[in-house]
Image 1 (cartoon, rainbow, N blue to C red):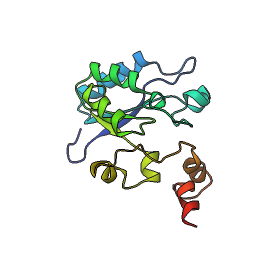
Image 2 (cartoon, helix red, strand yellow):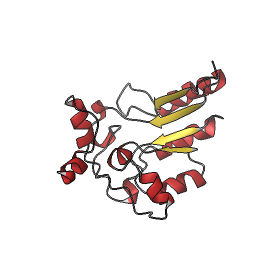
Image 3 (cartoon, rainbow, N blue to C red):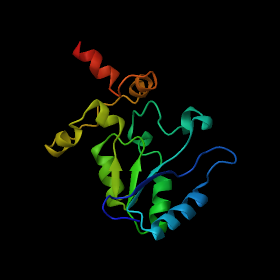
Image 4 (cartoon, rainbow, N blue to C red):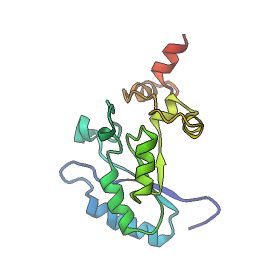
Length: 161
């Protein structure tokens, strides 16, 4: 694989449906990708068919226990491969992100919806304001995009009017 551009693969850790991708199968694939020279693997999971509680993008992340919903799977993949693992999925607080890295469950954190609401979230955390991300996890940003609009935080846009 060429090294001019980093090669990143986003993969479901599990589909959470009968006959879908299992964690065992994902680890097998990740080992092969690692051997092929991939630069990093971003771990997600779930699918619409798995239902509201096992979708890749979940609603209602209100407490720390709701965050990082693919952490167990990312940790299992991290133990099996030598390339960096990026964890995405419900991370809303600086403390949870830091704990994931310090525990060695992932090498990097991806913040998708929080950065849609707060593009300068990392700067805020870096400046010492470690309050959790303002993202409400209501998925209105995705609903807007599915409706043909640019991805944006509907709540934040309404506040500006």
